[in-house]
Length: 434
Image (tube, rainbow, N blue to C red):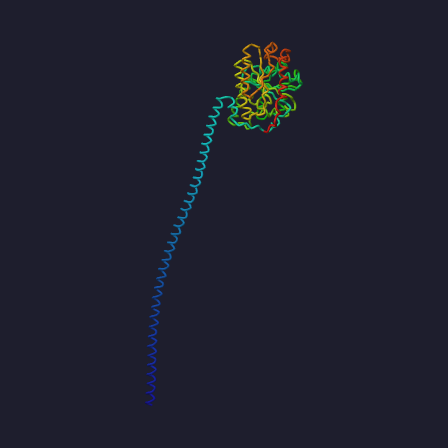
């Protein structure tokens, strides 16, 4: 029994020891686990603290980033503003450069205008040939066949007054009508209107002034209407008509000239009469055109010579008239031939007028034979002449001497025949190219 009890006690002691060891081990492990848990809690607190710090740092970083983003946004806006400013500055620079170019162009144009004004002033104050060659002559479309048309155009011209231009013009018109049975168109381009007065009185009609002529030389002429409104000379010269001038013509001519000089006319006024004479209204109705001009190279005189086939120059046989005739021929050649205004015009010749037979006229004729060559060597002086006679003087400025007086006819008929002979001897016209 005692042994059994001793074994039980030993087992109990061993079990207690084992339990104690187990408890000790458990306690030790528990302490170890508790320490680990404690450390974990500490680490967790540290991590939590770090997380808080990290979150705070992140928030600060987000604020910093936001601030930087805002700053970058501000910088971008500033860049945009500066870019816009640069663009505006560039545009302003472009505008300034364009303005500078425009100013330079304006300056060049102003210099050209000043030079042109000086040249124009020079032209206005110098010889008539310089004035009327100020702009280059280019024959316009519409007058290509003018030089070849059957209706022949004669211009009677001289810068010297009192040389019987009107008397010769009206008598030649009557000669072509009565002797050659031609339908004649007479144009009076002298504002004094001597031809107009002679022919309207002869036809017993009123002098209508220069209205039709100004329409012919205007900007929008109606040629058929102009012919219809001209003076009908059928009673004295079958099929013939007259376009008159008047004292209001010089103002009209001067205005046209200035507009042409300043380039205010779309077309060349020097060729307006040529367009009229080349139109069917004239060339299909008339055989001959006689143009009387004034004693200056006016707008109308230049237009007449730019349109004419033949130039007839009357002159008295005195030193003064011959000198004036020589100057006129020189100017006319420079304007018509050299400057190209009418390179196809032919000088029919110089006709001696109001000849008396005195000795001084022989000297003047010798001088004329020298001076007439300024047009071309061997320029023609008519053999036949208008002698001073009652046949002309009795009807001067009042009636047509050829229609009224046989003596006048006796002087004009030979001149008319010589004109016909001269035309037949002159070289064939070349076709005009506009």
